[in-house]
Amino acid sequence: MMTGAKGMASSSSTYNPPCAACKFLRRKCTAGCIFSGYFPPEEPQKFANVHKIFGASNVAKLLNDLLPHQRDDAVQSLAYEAEARVRDPVYGCVGAISFLQRQVDRLQKELDAANADLIRLAAASSPSVHMPPPPPHQRPAEFGRRFGNDGGGGGRFYQTPGYQITYNASPWADIYNPHGGGFDGNI
Image 1: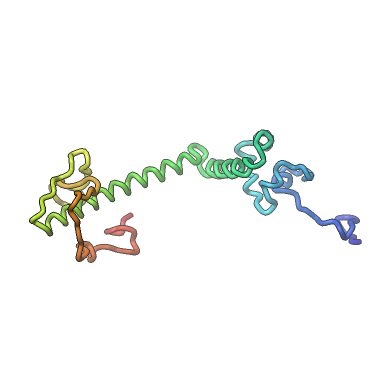
Image 2: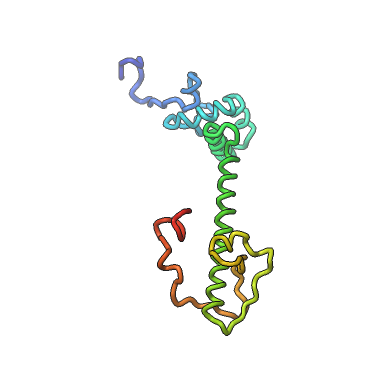
């Protein structure tokens, strides 16, 4: 038998620390605690954020209404949204999604401009092959500003059927920076 600050306990019993939710709420964690499987004691901030944004009773109601196999995904979603709301109280995870969408749009424009430059270089290196310019709706507006020409070319890279483009040497080898993220390192 062990004796000490915790009182009398048999040697066969094990101490299970309360889940993060019960510890935060300062209550006894019972065997049927709805939070215990999803808020482990070593992740107290996870429950603190969820409690701050959604409230413990709302989360308990939600988890009780779900099937057991759906609860883990629900808790992960709640924890993600709560952490995003703590960081950005106005937009939450929508702010992060918007930021990433703007980044994808910017990178798509850069890819379109790079593909247009590749088409222009391929056409210039092989004068016997005539490639028509892409339609005006596929020409990026910033192409002329970025590459210092009259704005011709642009659009996505669509290879003409039956025409094979081969590149023997990289025309941008002297300006490409593999450690900077882009051609000029400003990405």
